[in-house]
Length: 116
Image (cartoon, rainbow, N blue to C red; front, side, top):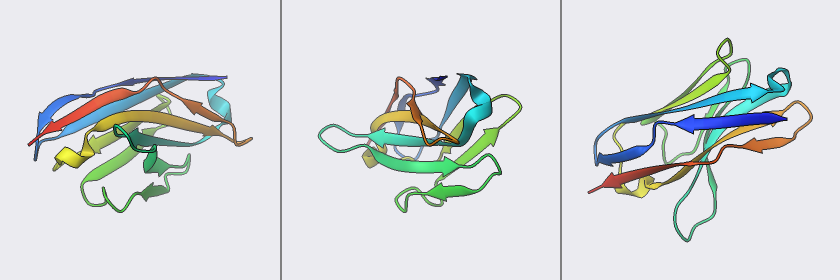
């Protein structure tokens, strides 16, 4: 089992920045890909960004150039630096970890609200 704890959400004005963190514990040896997803009210959960253990990243088109995902394997933590935030970025952001056996683990979610 893997446990994920997110932090760093909050309220910010459009154009501002926030940094999300997600610390993993438990069977961390099994984690391959870590990432961030988000879910806005009335919408499906969508991928924001992922990073492999080796550092390969993948981003949703809507956040490319504004968000940066990074990972500290020594601290078992993944980060999401969000710059130039827009009101449409408002959502609950969820940390995800996928094991080498393709099992998915989720954090409890952290609210990000961007005011116009």
